[in-house]
Amino acid sequence: MIFVMKRGIEYSRIVVMTMFFVSLVVFPIARINFKKALYNSGLMLRKILIVGSGEAARKAMAAMQDEPNLGYAIAGFVDDKPSEDEISGHKVRRHLEKLERYITFGGIHDVIVAKPELPREKLVELINHIQHKAENTLFIPDISGIAVSGTELRHFFRQQTIIIQVKNNLAAPLIYGTKRVIDYASGLAIAIVFLPIMLLIALIVKLDSSGPALLKQKRLGKKAREFYCYKFRTMLPDAEARLQELLENSQTAREEYDKFWKLTDDPRITRVGNILRKTSLDELPQILNVLRGEMSLIGPRPYLPREWDYIKEESPVIHALPPGITGLWQVSGRNNQDYAFRIAMDSWYVKNWNLWLDVMIFFRTIGVVLKRDGAR
Image (tube, rainbow, N blue to C red; front, side, top):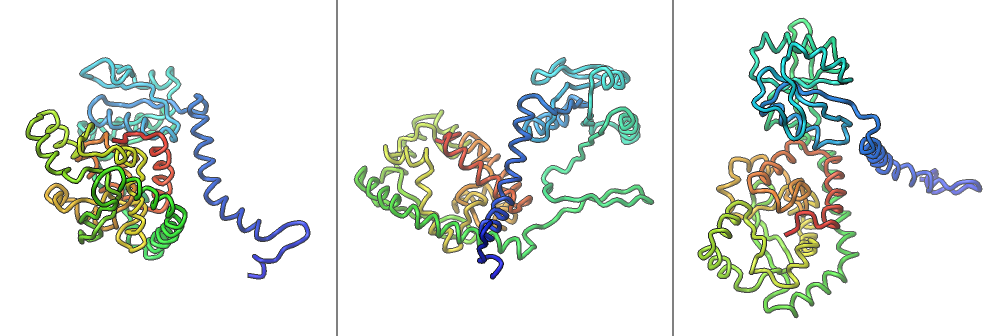
């Protein structure tokens, strides 16, 4: 304490300590953005060739495109019998026997093997051949649905076996406790700062249309326990009757609602409610749920009890954490993604949860809200 509070003539130790903790957050973010800027300008990119042209190869391409911070530039595909000559603008070359030539003359750094249909012997032969031609050989095992964040490989050389170790980050009391402390401290700060704004919004909602300014809905929380979730009212008092009438008279609206559980031009939403939804200000009262421990700032979506039949298979995973005001699916296209995708994103988030994932989602949420990306 003496070290922290002591002030010297030439420097303040408070400043030193403050800068230390600030650097823990700023430097990693700055490093990521610097690398992204280099990659966007075409510098330091690594050319990568994908072996295969089926579903696994397309997933490999999508993975590279979704993670531009990895610095890969897709040089194309190569396969023996491709069904088409081009995939998303990338040329599909034929003849696997010419792979070495493609690597050498194409300036290829890395090669991804994405041909799970190959017999094991052929697959081993192919990987061993590529290993001595490219700088790195990447192989995609089929582990869809399994947590990937924090996984480690265990090597057993005598048996030529690799075991994937999947960590349960929720089993670390200190890390999970830190999340709760951050939730409470941040929630308290937000509540204090935004209290005048919330009072003003409540008044505007009340003046705009009849009905209460604040609504509470039953939602499923941690361990699927029901709780009341608070939001500013954004719909007309007879919202449900309007919805049923619309769904009965419009097949297009019925199909959209069945897919997204939302409507693009929702007649139930008030003028003020439309603004609140686009800016996400309607969710500010959920800070009260955060302070009560029913919700988190970042987490899975708070599902309605009537959605149980659709999520019950994933419930043991999704409801291992409290629901969040924002989450992975909100920053992955928000309302532009279908219902099944939202469930998949929530499940993936819980399986791969860590504090850095929360930090990433927090900053991406700010960008999504400011751009109104996917807002509906």
